Image (cartoon, rainbow, N blue to C red; front, side, top):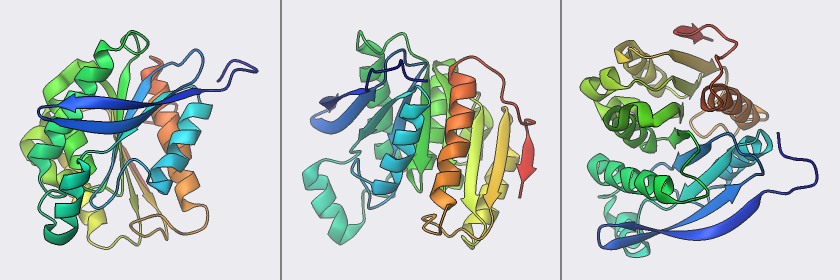
Length: 235
């Protein structure tokens, strides 16, 4: 929880990634127990209202958050017409790894355990990066994600505790998450939010996602065990 009377401190940051510079919003509560990087989905960005709602919940639970654009402004304009970047999982993964490296080098962040919160195609990038970085990543959460796009090899290589959240009415994506869940060999949980569609726009659905994510991430980033059973599938 935040220290009484001390509001989280926010600032805009620029993250180097090859020749690109990625803009982000970093928010750090007092006495943060960890840092969560948000990996947005196709056609989205750091200003996503859905991710910002979840980020506020995480901040209230004592976690720092970094919401950043995976694409440059020029790339976003191209993607609007061609959709060529939003499914370029290799590009998105590279950008996420660069953002992680940047965060680890910041004096005010380098002591914090790191978690990922991925959505849609961003979930695949989070899975692959977590597989590559191993114990450097403390936990992963996927919201309405496409972890299947990471491939079975990456899924099996993930060591970070991973929570998959999918809407029960997100037809097709439920099955893809169930298949991905089977490939994971880490501490894992799959939660199906009944009646929710892909964007969790139904009343109370996104708030449920935020609660689930905050509980999972704080438990693992703070070095605690989750209260719920691991490797379970919850409807």
